[in-house]
Length: 125
Image (tube, rainbow, N blue to C red; front, side):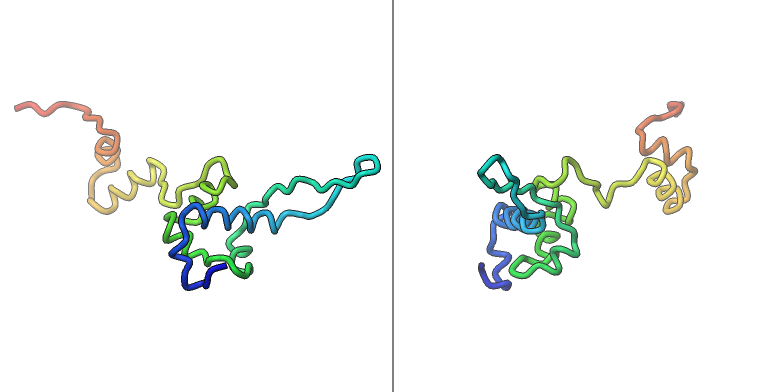
């Protein structure tokens, strides 16, 4: 492995592969009996947590993943651990309306119209 100071020299693909490798290391090990032959189970990686990454040696710190991919959820999504991810910056429409109204002093109804792009009435000249 490269020195920890060199994590930024890793490509996105290398960083994501390391995340998958960590998931494989976290997966339970074992074998099954198939007649006379012992066969190792296919290892299905386990989605690493922030705590797993922090405890792991020879792996980049989470800050590298956050800097490279924007957030931890995106890195796990790109590594194939989740089918989707929650955007930590996602807000519901009601939250946006409340925030816009509070910051600007607009009514909630007007803030809602601004966000939806719908004008109730056209202004007469």
